Length: 391
Image: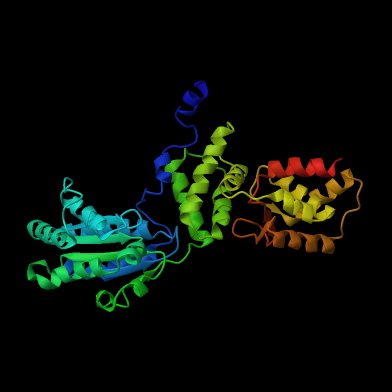
């Protein structure tokens, strides 16, 4: 009980942990300026010419699709107010609202929270939606997130019905816009009539985030959610490198939050690169023992040397690594490798995925190769390798 009460005390490290929630949408979205601009160009007629617009957005998990759409719709609503056009949005996650009736219920709840959840057919619900649109004189942006789930289950009849609402009633012209969000192209799941309402150019493709974009996202969340000076330099670079393989901002944010929690658990005042390694090992475990058994003794010594150097930092240079390797060889009474063989073994460790090597960038004098270990806490490697080598 005492430990639980202690854990509930105000954090020394986190300032506002809610800013690390997947549901939080920051004012600025690093790396997605181009997609935001593309949406702005497509929806300009909605604001100034009272037209509707239909857009397809595709991209992998963690590529910022939902966040961009939500933030854009806030900007769209503001632009509408400046031009005396009321624009509102309703966001429906089709993974949780899998049927047409559940989607319609979500939309109608936007206008009436007490709307009954059964007893009305889809045509009846569409008629009620028309009455709300007429009465309110608004433009409604319907966001169907994970749209492929709905389309696979129920087809594209409902999407077609939304577009037909406006064609059948001149009072409703330009009253609805559709944004379909999906991890994959949904055009193959739509019938020709529904597909014809989406222009081929109205597709915005969100690629995976680059390492630089991920680092900018992590830096932003550090500023928003952590106490000043509570995250060591190099943590954002390391987390961005860990998430680069997936290009997934959600994974990067999850690692950042977990790193802070690990630091608190260990009683640290700041988040270090080693805390990020513990976070990665917890989220995506790496069985390093099996790999170590497959490498030779000199590679094991090199790995120990790297682990020792990386206890308090994110990267070490190859020069530092070679010096530490030679020092350990001396303590083991072993003859060290020559420089050429040392480099060859270092490349093999990189190929194994134990090391991660990169060229030094801005802020580093000269041009050298930097080494890091990402997938396992180096303190665990040190303990394991020292027991193996110093017997």
